[in-house]
Length: 353
Ligand SMILES: Cc1cc2nc3c(=O)[nH]c(=O)nc-3n(C[C@H](O)[C@H](O)[C@H](O)COP(=O)(O)O)c2cc1C
View (cartoon, rainbow, N blue to C red):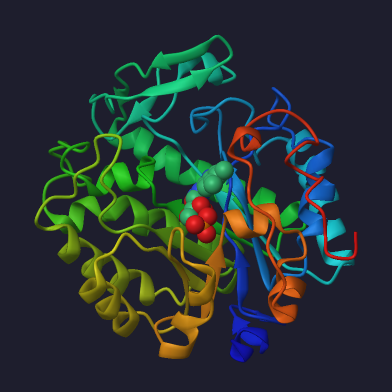
């Protein structure tokens, strides 16, 4: 456990401890994608972790999936994020903005332009999504042309530049959880016959292109990526070749010298061990629902360099203080995860309170 509280080098930064706030969508931004006023307080309260990874943040109008998520591509959005990054820095924290393109996991009622969603192929995810008028089926998306795929890479690049302008320490590409990047990986969502579909090298191409463009734009040591090998939800099935795709992808990404790789672990232990060997920079591991008594175990075993926690940090603004003191943790309230205001957002008590 003690090794959690030792400094670690991540990209161009030295972080004071090895605890990471996992990215969590909270759906409290304005309809123009500007982060809400309370977001500054929310993130500043949690600046004691070594690294904050923000909620998924769209790099363009097309990239939005859910209601009232923030963006990072307009001047107003940049100004909104600047308040957050300054407040986190004032508290000695570090913050990477997660760039999330939802791809087909999007409802037209939720996006600024209300257009049909975009994806590798015109295949619906077969699930519903919350909108202003309640749950609705997600419609079939439109397949991106090859030219539009390249434009999407350019959108990511522009958003990464905007994140740096907003004072972020870096960006994490959301390549996990069934969103656009992972949709390219899965034959169930990607039936393209061009250079972005078919063999694993082609299905990995979009992710590598996005990472390469962003690394070029803001520096590899401020660029990171999150992956969740083996995700099986919302119509994502990576097939028998899935693990090989990740071995290829991680080896290629490793050549870029990115700040870190963040794995949201889905349970394939041999693949995780291979990734640990293939990847030479910092590895952040998030094991969903990890029991409290296992905190620090992946650091101790050498499986990871940092450990990420979602709900525990959401519910405990002073997560690091509590861990050090071996104090009880607040429980996260699922009813206030998405939308709403202060309740369940900035009112979780710290120990001193
Ligand atoms: C409310 C909520 C929102 C989430 N939003 C995101 C997101 O925007 N991007 C992402 O990569 N993961 C997201 N996740 C997944 C978390 O980052 C994390 O992987 C998950 O909660 C499991 O870790 P935990 O058991 O420590 O909470 C979200 C999870 C929760 C609970």
